[in-house]
Image 1 (cartoon, rainbow, N blue to C red):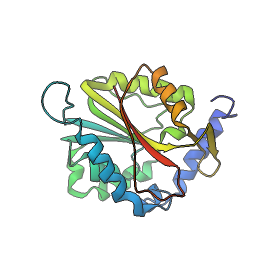
Image 2 (tube, rainbow, N blue to C red):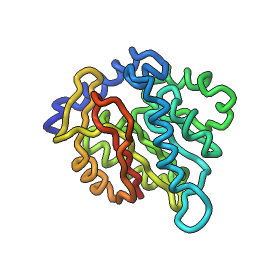
Image 3 (spheres, rainbow, N blue to C red):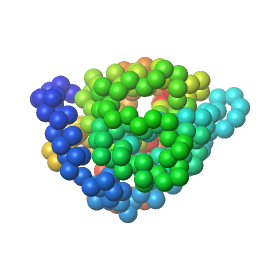
Length: 222
């Protein structure tokens, strides 16, 4: 993606500026589409429950990592109800501060709040059963996304799972000047996953979303 992101530094710094100005609310996290939160969470829960449990090949429900966690919308409604503990990582400190109150009592089961861009974040080796990466891969260049996925692979426990849930374009890479991100098509996302040495074990499209937004696909990786 080097040819698309002309200046890597401004690509990241412009995104940081955008998110610093976004309100620390569910609506702010979803770019004004707060109304889709329940549809999104219910789809994610059904997807994740296929893998969690005891027995051969099943993913344990010990510790999860919420990447690009914002104020903890996914942590609160998807991950904490299913996992014993959750870590959050986000580039905006204000969102993580807000998460502590937004999560309420559940805050006690948060292990760590990491304020860091994913391009620089190194998750602890062998710590996580599930690494959830939603609506944030567009903020990484191709090479940084591949490298981050490789670091995530090392951070998984046995039978652990990496989940990417994101918008996909119809063809090629579509830049978004507003929040300094890109939207890739599914073939490109799949090729980057392969480059990271991961395989897609399941893939599905999120249904019932507004027609005007890009399709959202969920990929489970091992």
